[in-house]
Length: 229
Image (tube, rainbow, N blue to C red):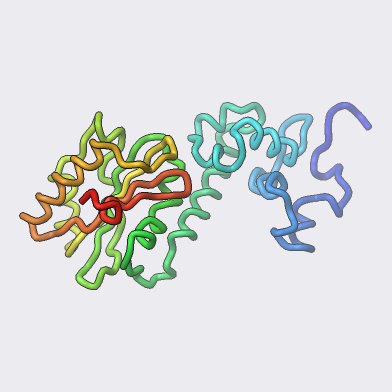
């Protein structure tokens, strides 16, 4: 065989990812094979599967790819803007599916339910983002909105941003959520101070802040459950 490397059409039919998925289902494919289907084609001298393996290796697996931005992905040889956009679109669809309620309003009755709403969005972010989960009188989710981006200590959330959105949405109460890019959801003193400030404003406005949840790497801390509110 020549040294140009395999492309997918050179593989036996039984080893081609699309054909294997059609015959055996997506569960039978490796992560690299699934990613290769998203990429569609490889680069000069390598198959889409090999490019997918290199992408996974370069970014430390799926979590690293999820955290990476399109410009970072597109800089990898053989990827480019089009393939990077395809990959990020696939991740975004997965994230939306994970938080979808099929048109039925989600009801939040505990911290774990609130954390599940934002976990897939916040856990991979490289900057701290403050998100509001706005609830109606039945604790049904009206919407979630990103309120601020950047570190909370360096770019603190002002009550006007939080409660302007709450008033706009007709919210009866709200839950604050933000991520720790380090992966450790342990609350800082800044987190506690910010929460106390917003709780007091919420009492004045008649729109209570019922919890503040910090998202880490697949885990969370509720300040309410931790007795810090």
